Image: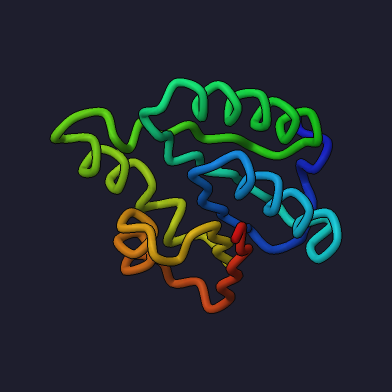
Length: 125
């Protein structure tokens, strides 16, 4: 069971595509949203080096009690449909969306599904 399980804080869904974005989300969560139920969605890139770095960062986040969802968002022609379909219910339940790249085509698509009124951008540039 997660150390944060049972918290009454808002349900937060965060989308990251790079190790720096993941680090920025963790910093934001630590300083701005302690107690929030945070699910990190990694929209995995194809570059093997970046994937490895993201896996190591995701493990750090998991140890801190955050839920990790690894999505093979770029894994073939049907991957975007599987990713969006798999995240639809979580997007509808989320109270807050945190994004590492608001210009990402995936994030733009996913934002059309959410009902969250609280949107946070953590800039890695």
